[in-house]
Length: 136
Image: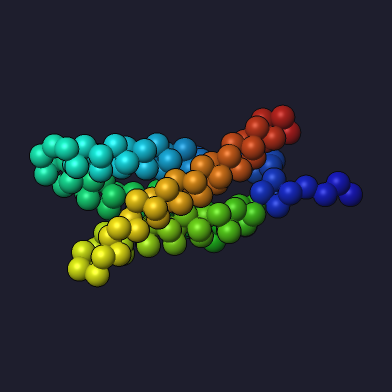
């Protein structure tokens, strides 16, 4: 019996489109977040409002990435990275909400960790899709 990595199980059943879309969109959206934060430093407060609003919208793909391994058994191999992305996202929101204790200074660092984790997850999803294309 050939042993495969746990993110490659059930290739014949495919990868849900919403999971793939979320994995692809999340890092791009985070780059937009970095850009809007930078613009907010040098321009009008409208960019800060954009940064805040777009950050809240990011809950949808973050939740979809977390739900994938919970709801679709063949995606269980993604559980660690999906949970890391979701928890780092929640940490990001918590850091942004706490403006009085000075923890907001950790917001950019956590954002970098979040981007890194989302890119690792995306690489794993793309590897699965590549193997899936060769498999069937």
